[in-house]
Image (cartoon, rainbow, N blue to C red; front, side):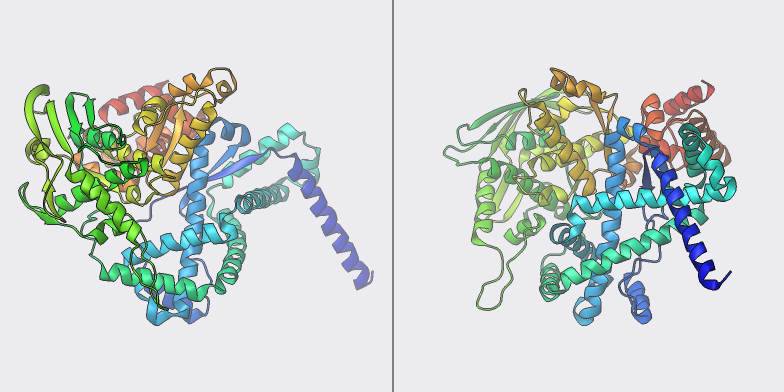
Amino acid sequence: MSMSHLSLSLSQSSEMFRQEMIKLCARTQPFYVLFMFEQDEQPYDYVKLFETYQSMGTILKLEKEKIFHTSEVFIVKESAYLENQALFFQLRVRARERLIEKLAKSVIFYVVSQQQHLNLTLLQDQHLLDDSLTITKNVLKKWTFIGEEKTWDAFTTWYSDTLTMAILEDIVVVEGLNSLKKLPDKALNALFFAHMNDVANDETFIDKISLVVDDYIKEWQEQVILLLKKDLEVYIEVEKSVTQTMQNARDFSQLATVPHYMYVMNNTLYQVIREVLYQLNSSQTVYSFQKGKTKGTLFLKEGQIIDATMAVLAVDVLDILCGFFLHQSENMQNIVEIRLTDILMMRDIKQKLGGEGRRGGYEAKQKQQVLAVLALLKNIHVEIEQMVSYHTNQPTPLKLKGQLLVFEQEYCYKLGPIFTPYLSGSQRQLALLPFRAFHYHVYRFRHEKQLCRYLSWRWRTQASQAKYWQANKVSTLLKAIGETLNQRSPSRTRERFEKALDQLTTDGVIAGWHYVNWDEAVAVGKGWGNYWLNAAVIIEPPQAVLETYHSLEKKRVPMTTTKKENEEFAKQLANFRKSQHLTLSQAGEMLHVSAAYMSQLERNIVRPSLKLRKRLERWLLS
């Protein structure tokens, strides 16, 4: 046989094999691949990483760590995915955000390579890098194809097809192509998913897939740079402006002892006053309130003009003033000073760029808004009829009244006397509030703002018992954000509520959320809205909150288990769950814990309480 005939024969054989493999792929059942990422333990030395890439001449490059290597991989059939769609969607959002962050870092590297003398500080200062990453991620989402849903749909389809083909090729090597072709669909899928589960965390197989994925993402990187290149000078100038603004302004890093958070008061009185402030309007000057065993009245000055935006902004400014006071004062009587620009910067309001005859800085309207809110807060008077004394845990009648804030000069103030009992002794309690609560737009993201504050308050009150994974009724959460069910169109209320939770997940304010014991089939029947109000939602706090509040957990009776016994127990949990063919979510529902917490138990990252340990032991015996 001539070489030309041999080449043609091999080409035809290859094409025939490819067609047969495509037919096998079409017979496999739909599935999803989910990635649960670990928290990065150490920040990267980005200057060193940049210099390495620069010396290699490969600025457009992912970090050495492959995208999916720091994650646990879960294979989920489409039917199981649809049953737990809310939970699994959160995992997909997290994986997507991780990938976008990688792309953002590559863009920053490119910018630094173009203007190294101006921007190398971005890689040396973690706070500046964090802000630059946030800006760059927003640029990617708003200005490029990365923000389009069809981009991710195409990636998901491509990845699923690539993974399916890779697994079938592995099976063909062992079983043979003809053997697979003869199998009925049910047997083929059983073999396919069994092999998929075997290789899901196999390093060799993951290496093989990761290399293909990295090539796909690198094409994205090159397209992104080409898209942004024409606006690169503008992009660099914006980055330069942000850097200079942050360097010239007051240093907020000390205020944020936990990165991206500040401390505010966390007593019932403070929380209920925030809830009342959200309700302020021009037609009412007296607001009675009662939350638990705290009861009182808030009074406004006559003639105040208040709209919905001003009411939301009032809560922002109150929290900023509270945070600054707690950070700077040594006692209740200290007077602290804040600048108008401090408040605007805390709210992430960007200054206008100067040059070409234009004046830089903040707009007059932005300043006037804050000044109007400060005037409003100065004139709020509060009278408390009763409050809880934590020494007896019983309502104690009080004749406590006074200003919400006491100003001695325009920007020099202290917290009002009504808060005196809450700032010392056993009743002093502070909570972490994410800066995101200030950054969200006062109108378009009002729900996200209010959820930030409600969850901040709830997580701190739950800290001593570590009961963060307690379910919240939908009706309770709606009340917390000042929302009611739209009886004519309950789906609108639900969609906006879930959109807010998804946004908080994307922004890292919460680690994730999912419904508990919610039957999606009910949502098509008449009157399902009222049933949904009684559904429960588990909202998981981020790692920063868990780590900060860990020391506040009440000391429990020490468990007499050794480190080795704990490791063995964790393995027993994982093996038992898998033997019962349960997902993390399903096992978590049975044990009344979240899927994320169940995963941590199985990996021996957390130790269960005595009560939960007994429940787990009974579950294993079942």
